[in-house]
Length: 319
Length: 306
Image 1 (cartoon, rainbow over the protein chains, first blue to last red):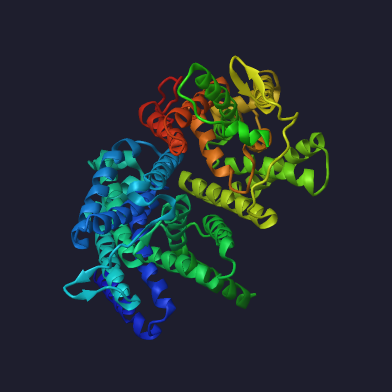
Image 2 (spheres, rainbow over the protein chains, first blue to last red):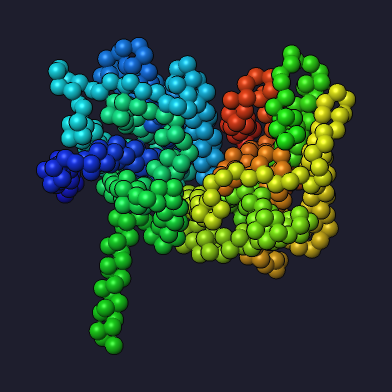
């Protein structure tokens, strides 16, 4: 437990000190998205890594959060701090309602059903043109403010996004060590065994699904207010796959792994600039290589790799 | 450009003719969904895997035919078998390189690996042939035929005829040949099939060959109507899956009926309600079936399936 506190403390210090090292500049903007994507990856990891339930529709929840925040503030003039929890609540209720029938499904069926759900949400974003502006997007979303302080620069948005992201990370780490976290892992390993031990597996799965959707919605609201513009293209199937890639690359069930995956996949397109259209091939390749050769993700795969290397060196030394 | 005119025909107030018209075009797209759906079912029944890359073979069918037609200047009758053979090879490679070596073949890992495979196939196609949309010439002209007040294109008839033929061959294979019967045995119980001496791995191999061939054929016969591009596989694949779900993952007539129902509903919905929500119709049906009758529209309840 003490070790976890120390780990989180170290992580938080590193994150909060990062802007000092980069001194603003374009990279700051990318690091804001690392924060938002970390929230999303951790949210999906709660579902996929802890509870063992796949979702290919999380980009949809992220999008609903972003659009609800955007529409309520820009079209109806709501206070963003009021719109954000309301959007999260709405997404939570939606996920809770749909969670009961959808989480009865398992494995491939669950994947297809959540994928279908995500695509339906995506189509609604595109077709309700009066509300969302359709495929050309929705602009004029205000920045968040506290009193007269406006979150309108990259550094300010960095601290805003990471305050939320650190909160989510802390929450997820705590959850893993709680009774609920143990129950989730039990459901992951064997749902039948978990139920025999008195875990209400069905309710628990729906709760985690809704929780994960709520965090995604919060990330969506932050995204809308920092970007001030949203369009359906950011919330399609490809983004759901990207989120999945982040979680798998980082390591299923590891919170800091999700951060690693989010950071890697958010920074990667910046490194691959010029190869713009082809980044999707890199995702596909990474995803395949990870599942085939490092099914535990980077957080488990890298130590394993070094251990094996060390053993091989020892073996060579003896020979 | 008769096809274009035909497809963009002006909307008239709802009439019987119009419903007939939508049903005709719905039946032909439904036939395509059925072929793709059967591809899904065959792999699922042999291996328990839902191949998320199934749609990419549909795309490959169209794009490879185009490649053989234009780059190698082959005639259509020669380009089609070449495209089918290459698609089958890619299907085999996919099974050998990605699925078989998987260390932990849990359902989640299989989902991820097949998604990754579909992204790679799509991405490499884009890398090789670009992002443009291409047209393939129809098999026999594009002079519309008038039937009971509605017009259909010769390609629609080709689609229906070829689908019927494929279904007949499929049926013959699964019920009257030793390999087909062995594959059915695998789908009932893989372990027991192995115990009576069936080479299960070989059946898995066969299932990938057959389903890539079916996918490619579907892609080839639909390409003259809908055009083809590197990214057409995603939607077609998902709708094929929807057909298979309606049919209860059967590799026979139930999935065909599922595909036809889906095609007609979608076409009627697009014509009579809203064309923007056309794709949503398929997914709403998919979710409803999964929620209410996960064993398929015609299947008996089975606890293992969900």
